[in-house]
Length: 113
Image 1 (spheres, rainbow, N blue to C red):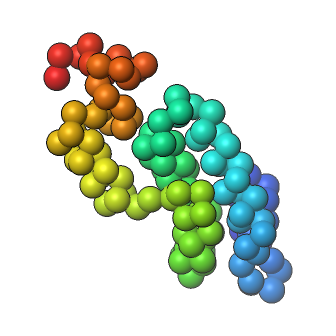
Image 2 (cartoon, rainbow, N blue to C red):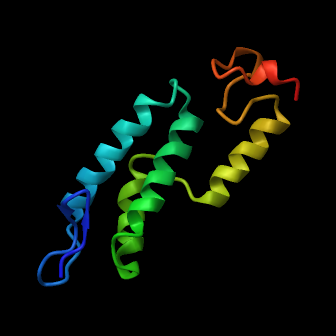
């Protein structure tokens, strides 16, 4: 049985991982994450990485290392890497979106944190 993500086959009938199909998925997810990130790279990475983590649930675990390597081209980050960035941002006066709290279009500076 072939595994799919949004109807794109990433494991062929012989059980091989289709890197080109997966790269297409990564590109699609990257485009979607970019459209909603407000031009914040940190927020893009968080959105994109969450979508990749979700998409990984649709393919066998044995292909995850290959899939993650391909996703890194689009700036995939692990949960630990994202948390490290968020902590660094907080320590330096930036919000969770990676923007100066007083300039964040999401209103982070208005929350009185």
